[in-house]
Amino acid sequence: MSSGASWNDRGLSPELYDAAREAARRAGVSVEEWLDSTFGVQTVRAGSPGAKPEPRRAPLTDTVAKLFAPGGTSRFDFMVTNMYFVQVPVMGPKPGDEKIRAFDMSKMTNAGDMIELFKKQMQPRDGKTYMMPVYWGYDTMIFRTDKVPEEDPATKSWGLLYDDRYAGRVALRDDAYQSIMTAALALGHKEPTIMSPSDLKEVTKFLISKKKNFRALWTKFGEAVNLISSGEAWVMYGWMPMRAALLREGIPVASARPKEGLLFWTHAAFIPKDSRKADLAMEVANTMLSEEYSAALTNASNYGPISAKAMATFSLEDQKRLGLDVTDGKTALLPELWPDAMSAWIEAWASFKSA
Figure 1 (cartoon, one colour):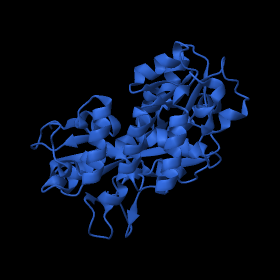
Figure 2 (cartoon, one colour; figure 1 turned 180 degrees about the vertical axis):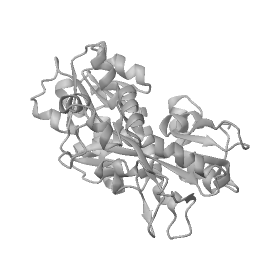
Figure 3 (cartoon, rainbow, N blue to C red; figure 1 turned 135 degrees about the vertical axis):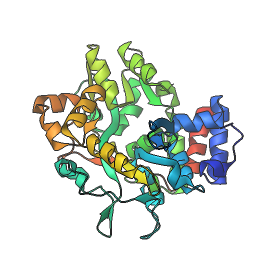
Figure 4 (tube, rainbow, N blue to C red; figure 1 turned 135 degrees about the horizontal axis):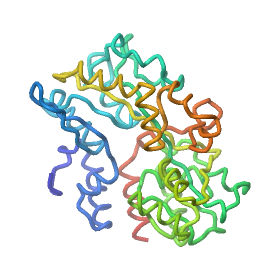
């Protein structure tokens, strides 16, 4: 798709597309490249009988747009994406409005082995289940323990990213959603996604005031890992696999457990309602719930296993080392929900970057 695509090709409001276009201009990339780098989802395209499924990557907003486009519910057979971001549009406001089909739970033989936290997230409606959690993770602050003491109270808050003691040694992700979320939480906003315009203005002003503290705004996995491993940055906003990669390199790092909550997400599988390969899609989803798949995924990526049996294959020590020990209800988890005014967030981030 070219950068001149209209907003409704993406399923975006005109205001959000304009804001994304401005953010892309400031970043020096096309609006499509900016959207693709900001939101992502894995999909499998429908094919002729007997054909191999064709996996492809698409933005979250693109996923919703494709489902709502004419013929969209038959174009893809299987999708996996951030459940919190898409559950409202794909489920629709009332029974019968769903763009996805219910799972035949008699075929989901591994669903009963799910960790309890995720059994409650299967999107039931009228006794039917429409979305199946398949793996999970969270974002937090990763810091070098040889530079930032683990016992430092600052490591218990998102405020660590904005602590003047570490000015010039902090790396944020170049991302409107995640960076504004962390700044808002550091300022005490308990539900940033419903902030008022005046609160967003306050958060933007705060970010600008701390801009000198940031060594870099990272955009790629390897870039972020290298910032910490080289010692260029001591603290960064990061993902679970980044910590695992750094530990494999022998870099002394830890993940913070901010009192405001880890930015938590669940990726769920769902099946477009007119899929021609629904039975095969259910087999795939059921496999993703299995002990073997869950354990292999965690070993390979460090993302969280959905299967309680898979979790049990990791010792308590390993669960703590890998950051998997957060699903027992004792750790504050903050779901990554879509903001009420995402277009304003994008504009605010663009203002921060140009300040």
